[in-house]
Length: 353
Image (cartoon, rainbow, N blue to C red; front, side, top):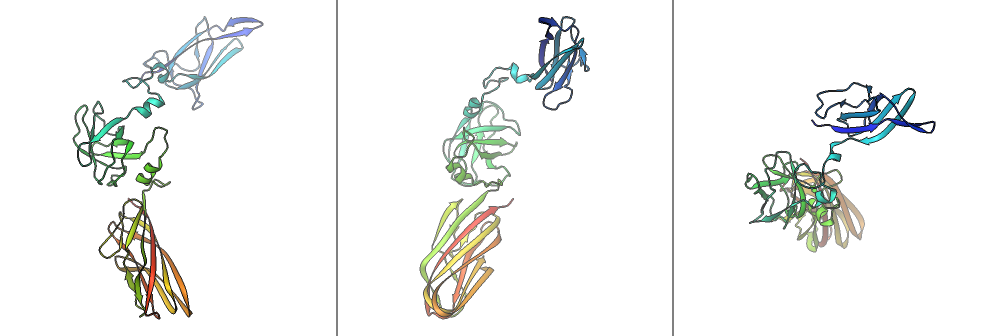
């Protein structure tokens, strides 16, 4: 491994005269660790120097080091001089730029992304100009958003990779709209793994945050709600009836309703399931609400009123879900001949590996 180079002249103002410190004893400290730096008299490191070492009779100091930043102290005849925080990293020897062997600036890193285009249904391709090594991270600018959960990307530069699936960092399938604009992807030798959404100023845009739905703990989450706004009439026989949802809304991620009017869970995870049932006619008697997964009870709540009144029941629980599970709400009342009810349900799903 090549080493960084440092040269200096040990001299000090003594009684008004600048005098060279002849054959100084030199100590080199790694400014990062506080310990002795690894030093040598040659760039390759084949001729190591012990510490302290002796500088030239003319006060010159010359060494190579693996440290990026050093503190150098030279002492001779009771006099000493110290140079603190001296840069010795190899980056100081390189030109800036994006060519091989050059060091890119922040602006060049942000701007250096490869444009990839969709040649079919989510079949993206772009020329990265080289073979991409396993474990390497590349930056791609997607000209359009994916519409399926299995988009592919092909590197047409170097040895073409062929169409390879783009997945989440843990290898799971993506979601529609996950990739749009500039993103970083890691090539693992088999697939491209989508890393955190990336913008040139290192901040998330609202659209990227909505599309990626990464929480603060880096776990993807989904959120949606479903309603049945007062058009369902509940019989007054005290039996629980499943209330089919008539509409759903996607807050984060993509949700759907099945043929039974149940809110379909888009992925496996732990869901916070909350529902509110409003009985729109004022009657006395017993009111019940029940949360269900795939038609089976998860939790139940009930109230009984001795006088006629309008009532609302709120109920919440945590539910372990698999992708495709249907969440629904049952309700019951035992006095009104037919009571219209308004049902609203909200689900926050934290996806699990």
